[in-house]
Length: 340
Image (cartoon, rainbow, N blue to C red; front, side, top):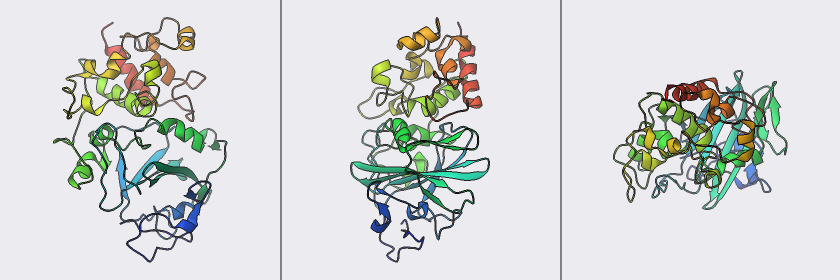
C-alpha cells in the first residue's frame, strides 16, 4: 500500500491510509505545493520511492525533445481498472500516475495525475530547483523554458493532450502496455495481479505489419505521438478523420467486435492516410499536391512533412522544439518502401 507523506516528508503513521494528507492540498489547485507530499518518494529523498509505487514503461512512447523519462503508477489496494471497454479504460478512485523528466542528466520536472473522485482528476507539474533537492507546484500560466529550448508545459497545455485519454491517462492503455518494449507494469502484470476487470487470453501484442516490413515501427510512432493524445475518435478524429490510434480491437478479438486486422493495410490508421488528401484547407494550401501519405515519396507526405518541422505547421503543434529523429526516420522509411 502506498505510504502517505506529510508536507514535511515524514511517513504517515497510519499504514492503512492511502492518498494525500488534506492539509497538504492547495484548495484552488487540488494538489500539494510540494512534490514530496504527492506520495511518490520517501523522506524527501528524490532517489527513494514508496514501495507500492510501481515503475512502468509503455512499448511506444511520446517524444519529449530528448528528455529521459521515468514513470510510476499507483493503484489503491483491492481495486481494479474497469476494462469492460478494453479500448477505454476507467481507473479506480485514488489512482496516481507520475512521470519524471530528466534533461541533460538533471531532474527538471515531475508530472502527476491523481484521480481524487470517480469523475475528478487533479493534475499538475512540479519543477525541480537547480540543486535537485526540492520541487514545487507550477502555477504559472506561461510555460517554463529550461536551458535553451526545453519547455515545461502549463497545466492548460497538458490538458490539450490528455483530453485524448478515455480517462485522462494516455500511456497506460491496452496496446502500449502489451507491446514487446513495455516494462514494469505491463498488461500481463496487471492481468496476473487481478487488476483488470477483463483481459484477453493473450496479454502480449505486436503492431500490425505490411509487406514493407516497416509499417509497425511507423504506426507505433504515430500511435504514441499523434493517435493517443489527439488523432482518434476521442480527439480531433471526428473533425478531420485523421485517425492514427491503433485500437485494441485491431489487435485482439474482443467481445462484440469483429476479427482483428490481419495486417497493417486493414488498420484504420492506414485507411485514413495512404493516398488520402488533407481535409484542412490551410494545410492543402501550404503543401500543394501532398497527400497524407504519398506512397514511395516521404517528401510529399504530410505525416512526414509536419512531424519533421518545428514551425507553424509542426506536429505536435505545442511544447516540442526538436524533431524526433528516430520517429521521423521510421515514418520516412515506411512511406518510401511503399509501391507508388
